[in-house]
Image (tube, rainbow, N blue to C red; front, side, top):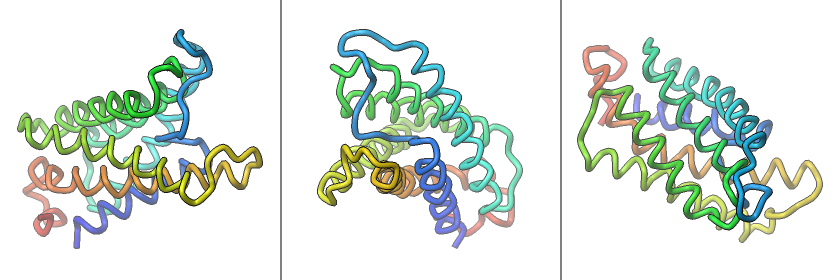
Length: 190
């Protein structure tokens, strides 16, 4: 049950902030073809940090725990992912940016949980990447990509954010038990 709450909280946080702040994933990358757009990356990092704060807070509420490390790791993961999506050269494309975001999310989670299991880190990185790419594919299949009006834009980001939230939430739920294993709320995470 705790794992389900963790995944639901992760997904809810990503969807709510995805609709408002187009975070953590997007169907396109950057504004400049070959160069970094540092102002866009900084702005993306700020929006991502806000999204991470909301999502991290919801995650901790869901498992009835207090962990500054888990909160900061969620903030860092989403901030880096959003900064990459907004500021990386568009020539990199979504797959490379999603993979880099996945590596950042795995590293942040490993720091938070003090878990150095390479298999778990790979799972988290792959889940983030697959969630992002799967969300982009689903949004495209639903005809939501590239919409100019705010409703289509919000719907596209909600779909992408939901896919990342489900995948990332599922991948990180077992690690949450390891870091906070002594708390009653995490005893059923499996």
